Length: 573
Image (cartoon, rainbow, N blue to C red; front, side, top):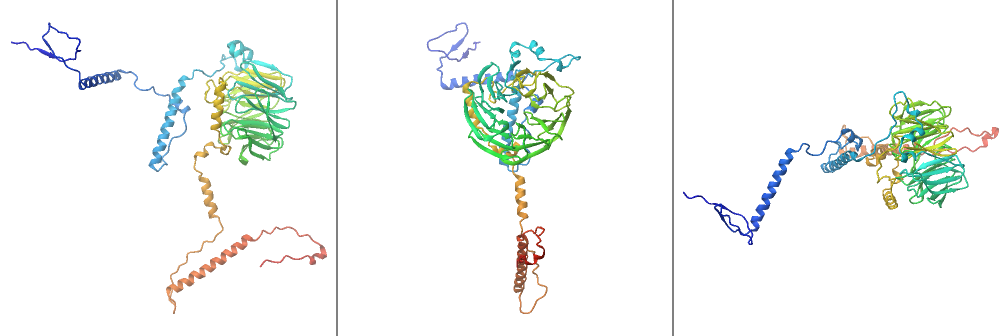
């Protein structure tokens, strides 16, 4: 039998010709065409896809890792879309928007793994308390960089007020005797130091760390970071307290006579100026959640104000005694108030409810200042002592978290943003102490960057100006803008219904019996005319009643016997 010869088809180059004599194989020269090349590519792709499918089946952890539901709750944007949308087109649009929000929540929750820094805390044995740990013990047990944050400045022009910039890098000091200074407290580099030769009642940073506002004895002055006077605003005089609203570019102030002012520093105009009719109000703070101003008076009442409404948005009777200090946390959920009776109360400021917690402080004097940190720690000034409470809003605190004795009277204090530092302005200078766990460990560089360069600062200033919120949107609920103004529509309908008008009654026009010489049409006309005349007479009488002025029962002056010569008013016909 003849052996079958196998034929193999394959591509060869023209230059290379090989012959295999061992096997009985016929060799054919085939020119590579586009169709053959196309088939080869398709086979290669098909084989690769097959391999990928096989590898997918082998994978242990297919897809993305599941997200912790607790972290999703932390980044939640609120409730989703309800079933109230009837139009299918708008329902689809809102559904797409909800999907975007959901995707943003998931991405934010996944990005938490990139936050490398954790919150600090104090840990002691069961027999010891955290209040027993002094600043000297903390300085001996931390690294050199952290130990440099504990320092003291002995100055001779006290008492001093201290304020940190929004990014927590710069510190501003102002004293009652006119000493004004600003410096980078991390590197201890001095920006400027001047004496304004008159008392300074309050100080504040503006939108960037190159502009400073100082409420002096008479007027409000604006300085730059070299100490040069930029503006003197004489329309804002005798100021007691100031607060700067960064997202609205508004400088809010209240003076000795109870006049409140809101200065828009981007255009240099006063957008709100009126008297609050509460007298002298030296206790003032802002609510960061909705940018309202909280004022406390001597009657123990806290009132919330906005620049466009001349009456308080809300009032809360917090104490039976005069208020000494107010503080609102960064989320705008809790408000702490203290009175002359040495009581400390925590209120739910969103629902205007409370008090949630009520503390009676064991001290010989009333609290002079209150301040919340970024992690909801509350600092209380009691004479020459500063006490810091942790988790005192959600649960009752039995004892303070930390206690520091200054040896001199405390004027005011501020927590440094993004640092575990509390800056205290005293009667003889300034003191910086470490409070572990008080600051936010991770910062958002697009919000406030402690390490920003000059170029980044300029770009952030322009961006903030473009995103400026108008003062008309300052309300108790900042989400009112997103809702339909239903109550105002109800008010309009009620006002329309309450207008003075008399609706004519429905007349039964069916004639009872026929009369001679008159048709149904004629009888209907007569009835309609009669009803119309009655209605007109009723309207005329109603207008007369409204037009008549109310007679006040004022006792007439008596002239005795001469009363008969007094002319009598003529009665209107």
